[in-house]
Image 1 (tube, helix red, strand yellow):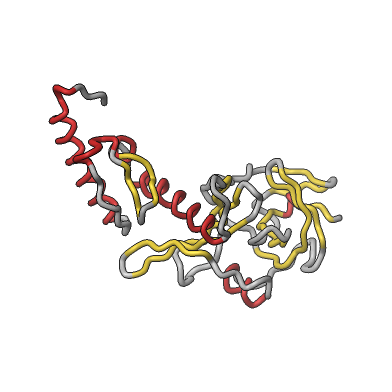
Image 2 (tube, helix red, strand yellow):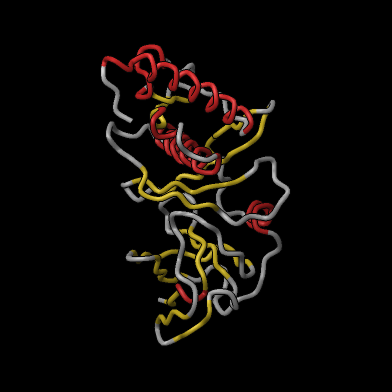
Length: 234
């Protein structure tokens, strides 16, 4: 909505109401917003969490809780990932990928944030003292006992732990070592959805939902989790 000088009072009234509604909604989502300076900026007031700007009141004030939560999550995941590697100014994330892990864990969810450099940073979302907390995940390497805590018991597959393979994800190919094998998983909603159905690599065709998945260390941060159809043996 565009305001003239004649209706600044109307904007202030709307901004005050939207700020209160948004603050209350975020509290219900276990997120504490920084104070919203609607008196100074009206509906253009920036919305921040711990000093990190998410959007403005015009945007978030018109959205539902699912949209608001996801916008905040993605921004905070990105900031934690960037801070954990002391990223250069201007570097941003290119992908946000939820990891399908077994529950319960000490955190709500685990995401891999892929930076523009290709580095894959794991970040957790936890609920502590009634607040959502975002922290780097301390990946302890590729010991099977640690991977079992995340993914459950080791499974069997056509390929074996220790094999070097080529993996294909979207328009990217890479090589790495299989460090763990896990059962077929549920499809997750994310910015990194793979297509369902048939894929053919190296003359082998499998459905995504029928075969084992593989945890592959490509030495670019947190290991990749790929379907059997995305693997070709070197």
